[in-house]
Length: 431
Image (tube, rainbow, N blue to C red):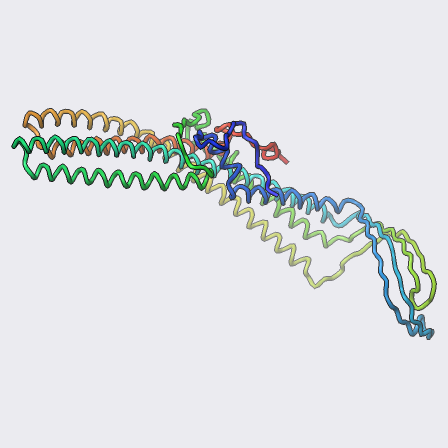
């Protein structure tokens, strides 16, 4: 049975594809199969833990049987009987002590459930970052397509002007050929931009389940962006769900080691049993009994299997500790990389803006000088290409900066929270 992960606080219309970034994230979390898999794994862990708790409760077993029985001797006496044997009984047992096996098993499953919960949150965080990156890239691609269309229009206007000048004898055939070459180049740039745009649309559909339309330019919540690298690292180590999941895996491995050691202890239980049988042991007639017993069992030797299992569990605990350490190192590395991107791309925006401003001034000046005969056509065309590339680079830096902001928030484990997307209470229950 498919379950809904959560009900978003945002109102999402099933018939509309004009989604904000926050709505796109909420839709992806609700629908994406990758997160459904993690949610199913979490729910399975919850059920396994509930099942283990059943060992604390009395166990009631009803059993019965009917069949043919041939007995030649009973207690040394020859009786040679052929009877129809029937059995029915009820057995109630209550575990009193099992060497802490049940307690350790419940602890292990509790920690595994928590590891699954944090893994689910981490998967949702990463999916949210994917959606944010694709969303921003798609808006950037849309604007680059528009910029490419404008570039084609401007080059075609230049071509028309140069052809008129040629007709008046003011320009040569080589000038016309040169502009036509630039028109062809601008068309190839447009096609490359359209290809990128369509690829991103397909990627958006894969994540969100809807085709994008009328996207809204998002802004990261800067309240969630750390003010320094040290601050970012401190938040990431304390809050990142991957580290929390690794910690719970380590605790689960330790609980498993304690469970395996339980076989060193005796087992103690109370058993109540009543039977109502007929034609038992070759003696015709009813056979009824009832008993209440305090049962003790102690495994004195089992070929060293208990020791081997305990040692294996100890090594699994060491493995989990190493994975936890490696996870923290990876989170720290990811946070550093995210901070570096945020810092340097932020600085690049300023220079790209200057590049656009100066390139436009140069183009305007070259155009006036060309009309006065003081600049060549090649100078004008090169200046126009410079403006186009400067605008394209600025768009890339602008959206890369926003993407770096979301990436840094994700590195600290707060991206879903920054989007104000509601999640189930069970996602936040600390066990």
